[in-house]
Length: 447
Image 1: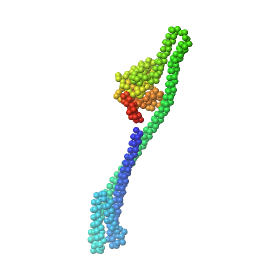
Image 2: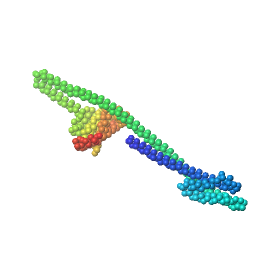
Image 3: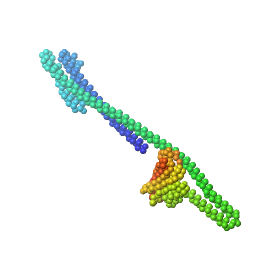
Image 4: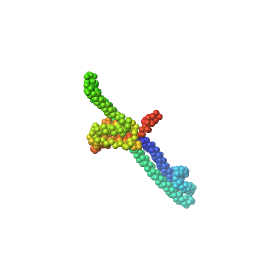
């Protein structure tokens, strides 16, 4: 899951970089188009000024008859070059190209009129000069009108390009802001997830340390218990047998009746020792579990528990419970054993139910009591991490999880339900896995 979140964040960064590059390129193109429109407008303004200056200079020459007044306004040679430059700037606009062609014709006619006015000097050409001046005025107005029309069209283009540029800039700004927020949010979520995982790992490590310490305590306690049981039961039996042997050895004149009584006491003590040894051995590891399977071992455990605790326990088993692997049957037996022990110690219930359900791929053991229930704090701690719990519940969970199963506990004021679900494997398949041919495959799978 962390790799998915990290990959998503990294992909978002790549998409942000690509989108930013694309939008930045668009913004640069828009700026170039705006600069191009401004160049066209400047060229139109220069052409308009030169047309006006050429007309003013020629009129001063006609009125004064001297070229001294015309010299400052003599820009006629520059006008055709400016028209060509304007045409080159507007090659991307067919409408402006048409206007420039029409303007070129008017400018050429106007330049011809100006040249004609330069040749008309003296009183005898007064009427002709008036005609040419009228033509010059009409052509000048037409040229100025065409230039103004081109400027208006270029102004509209400039406004459109500025609007597109503004929209592109706004899009870039909003897109980068949104992307920044997404990246920050993704990094925050990743950091939060990592922090939670580190905290859970720290809690798990602390739980393992406490569990190890608790296991050592339980191991010492169990050793003391076994030692006490050996001393108080089997040890006392052996002591009594030794006393009887001493009596037989020290009193050779015992009557046959007394000797028979001592032999009978020997048999009784031996029977008690055998019974105590068998009970202690069965509690440590019941042989029925290996010989006859979980069903027989569970029945033996439930019957013995009911007799010792006076708690009525009903056991419901499938009619034909298939044998499972040794690890699975042992885990089920230990969960059942711990569940019954907790009922006796903590629940206060007088009845309990045990149910075993075997499916095609799983087996489920359910232990139900009708006692006081578990405190909510312990239940929540068990569901989260098992930290701070006793070795019993933690041991049950570890056994089940180690085999790929699941352990659930539900509890309220009406009782507690423990449900252990384990995957099952037919015994024949387990035997094949344990064989020399399948041993390697089994170890690889476990890894």
